[in-house]
Amino acid sequence: MNTHPQPELRGHALIVTVSSDDGRPVLDRRAYASLAKTFHEAAVDDDVRVVVLRGLAGCFCLGGDFSEFLDATKHQQLIAAVTDMFRTLATFPKPVLACVDGDAVGVGCTILFHCDMVIASSGSTFRVPFVDFGLVPDAATSILAPQKLGYAGAFRFFCLGDTLHAEDAKALGLVGEIVANGGAEEAALLRARQLAKKPVAALLQTRGLLKGDTNVLCDRIDQEISLFQQALQDDTTLKRLQRIARLAA
Image (tube, rainbow, N blue to C red; front, top):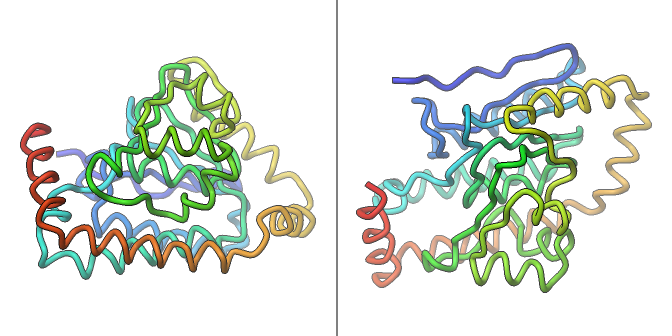
């Protein structure tokens, strides 16, 4: 069984792997809690000036753990962990970069909307099938996606569930740079080193001005999570999720 790589500090860049503790390319409640803890600690660590999110080899993240969606006994812990992680990410004061090499699906894609820059390999894909599952988007992407993609682009992406290839994602503004397959992490670390050399106060203040009022994002995260939780209590949605889980098994 593969294990989740621990956060690694290279210079002033903290590299964080988006995966479950047992090394699967999904996020379960323990992974959300671990990410929140990592971001809480990085926020007050002066040695950390930039965070770089990466996935496992050949896959960024395939989304949430379906088994937790289908187990009502885990819903309360799951919702609490998801809320804490995304509120922490929304209010994180330092630059966050992502290097995507492969598929970014569901929450593995919505987490990217909180990143200041996304660098993707040419073969990467992006998909948010929430509506197909009978769910709503998370991570305040109902605000962030129209801001970044435009309303029409966000509608197609979320409501039609279109898969975006790297070039499409760059054209819409989700991806900042495209590199050769396998080169996303190196390119992201290059950008991270560039940022880490900037005057710290000026960089953080400028980023804060660009981000604006994060309380709005936190309020939307709470609203989305409430709707998400309601959907998990709907019999039709649960049957749909069970069917999708069987097909994916």
